[in-house]
Length: 173
Image 1 (cartoon, one colour):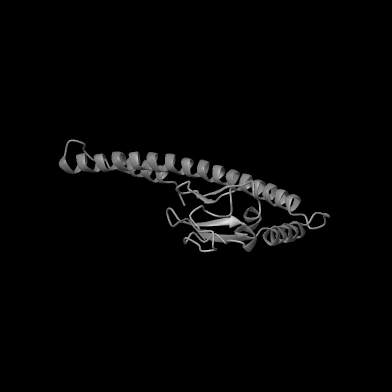
Image 2 (cartoon, helix red, strand yellow; image 1 turned 135 degrees about the horizontal axis):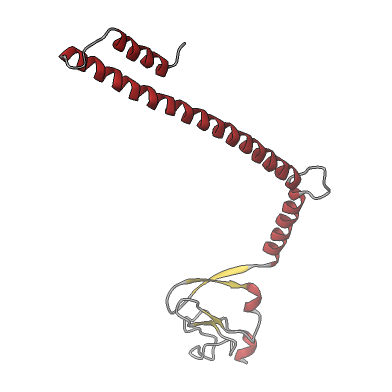
């Protein structure tokens, strides 16, 4: 197949060979058509070169992508190598066991703050520690005091004022 430029050159030569008068209406039209076809042929030729350049660039990029994919595969193989003594699953299992042990060691009770009615979780060990005051995180009121077991409003005969503090028989004697 001949190139478009060659075809246009042939038409131009044919028009000149037929001795078409450029001053007649038909001659002007044929001359202009051949000129426009020449411009089209030049543009198409430039586009063909551009396409060839782009194809070369795409081929080069494909090669680089393949190299990067191989690098990623090598890195993944290195990171997740199963032949190593190190096993992520074993570490995960150990972590779960430690977390379960921690859960077993910590025991909480829920108490309602008498001031703001917020439910507060309190470590059971703090209930038996006489040196700690338990404070509501919302309103900062003292929920459990390290002071006396009685609130001060309870009567000496063992009657509770409604505070919920247990009165021991020894305290009444």
